[in-house]
Image 1 (cartoon, one colour):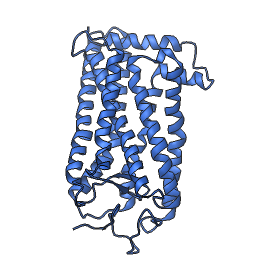
Image 2 (cartoon, one colour):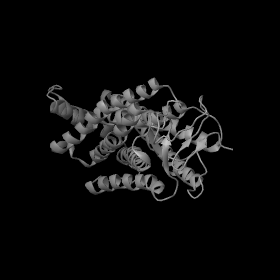
Image 3 (tube, one colour):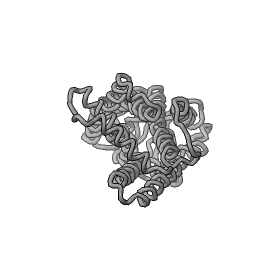
Image 4 (cartoon, one colour):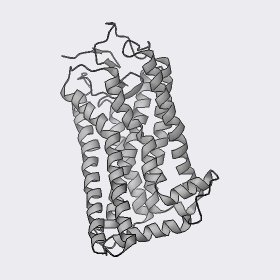
Amino acid sequence: MQNGTEGNNFYIPMSNRTGLVRSPFEYPQYYLADPWQFYLLAVYMFFLICFGFPINGLTLYVTATNKKLQQPLNFILVNLAAAGMIMVMFGFTITITSAVNGYFVFGPMGCAIEGFMATLGGQVALWSLVVLAIERYIVVCKPMGSFTFTTTHAGAGCAFTWVMAMACAAPPLVGWSRYIPEGMQCSCGPDYYTLAEGFNNESYVIYMFTCHFCVPVVTIFFTYGSLVLTVKAAAASQQDSASTQKAEKEVTRMCILMVCGFLIAWTPYASFAAWIFFNKGAAFTATAMAIPAFFSKSSAIFNPVIYVLMNKQFRSCMLAAVGISSGADDETSVSASKTEVSSVGPA
């Protein structure tokens, strides 16, 4: 038995203090949360836009204008920035407008479009992290022996992220599940709340959780775990090399940051969605669902911070693009960094 009210294109999944339920496409949802909470959500989305747009946009700009950045191993970072821009432009802007008004002002069609674009951008970002982890695993751990990573390989990796993202985002548009307002009803996502007849929500949620969360988690843990073990083993055999020891510590730190960033972005959302799915009818508040949903949206900021701004070559070009000098040794720092990583990798 469901604890909520289901409409043609929405589901209000909780009892509210007024006893009234109004369509989130037509009326303010202030019975779900106080107006100040909607305004706080709008401020948060404004923050994400103010930081997400310039960081991701600058990544795309400096790559287009600097040939030294147009290397195969950097393609996936550009892909990650493109995913962030999709989330900012087609997800965050719609959410902030809805939050200011207190309801989803763009109607059911707008909900489907926003849900699709937000899911697409989020999934491209997620699978970009998977491809990036695999690329680094291949380059450092060398499971295939001597291997030259080419533009073709990089392009195939980027194409793979879009195929997997479409495989997750497109089904609700064609009847396998559906996009409905979620949380405070200001943004949209796949329907894992209901057993709406004809949408096969249960099978879609199982598919999404298994293929688009569990598989990436296992892959990232395996690849980065193997990378850290490989680097530590190489560093142990070169204990007299200060540069090797430094590289080992940097690689370990980066791997920990990458895994933590991925888990912070996606675990709260996936876990809460799974809890709702396996506890149909359980009561929860609008903010309880909104918080994990917007954790995943924050990845549009901290993904480029972890993966791009901590890259010396990208950081140098970005600072130069905004007229800030980053020091005379920027050019040499890139080659030095590459040499250290190469020396730590197995022969």
